Amino acid sequence: MTGFGRGQYSINGYEAVVEMRSLNHRFFDVAMRLPRGLGAYEQAVKDKIRAKVNRGRINVAVTLKSETEHELGLSVDEETARRYKHLLETLIKKLDLPGPVTLEHLLQFSDILTMAEENALPEQAWTCVEKALLLAMDEMNAMRLREGREIINDLRARINSLQEKIESIKTLSAGRSKSEFEKLYKRLCTMVDTKELDRTRLELEVALLADRVDITEECTRFQSHNTIFLEALEDAEPAGRKLNFLLQEMNREANTIGAKANEAQIAHWVVSIKEEVEKLREQIQNIE
Image (cartoon, rainbow, N blue to C red; front, top):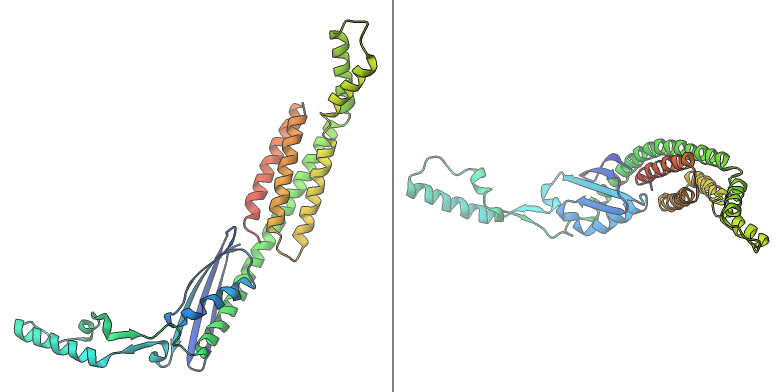
């Protein structure tokens, strides 16, 4: 499910801002941008997100400010800056170039500004980021929850539609087994012109053939899947994978119904059912 959250927290001279975005994805995947000085906490960030999110692509952007910039791991090599300034002033004089040496000129040399090691920031900096992260995550999950409720309402409506279609098929197919038996038996009696015909054997074979076109069992299983699907929507635990499996089974039953039913109207209902199942499959990719 999609969502956005922003958290801001300040403590002991640090201020952290965390922005999180979640996108639909089959698996759990986190992409983050942390201040260099907090690189050692990357796994900790993932663990905290996984504790509240089971599925989706999560993008995390962290900004950390400090009242004293050097505490963020950034420092200035003043001696190197002086040497560059001296060299540039000498070059300007020799080449008779206009203008003095400015800070902009010096910042072209990357070794003037140096970054400390990734684990150089104190733990209180991480504490600040952690608090902001939890605030952002709560806001993002609140948005995801609102979207989830809308999706569940849509799923319920589609399942109810499937129930109605299956009921229509059951009504249409009622008595088909007996009807097929009578048609097949009459046809065989007409085709077979011999006094050696084993009537008992003929009735058995025709009954077996008629039973193969009976779709009562498939309709019952399909409706059972519908019931389990609705129950799973009420479950507090993540149900995305379970719902996906149920939809596979529904599609399997629909294929069997279509293969067994020798009736144009039933074939039409089967096509409609498979279209609805596919829409459900697309929709559950958005939920956990």
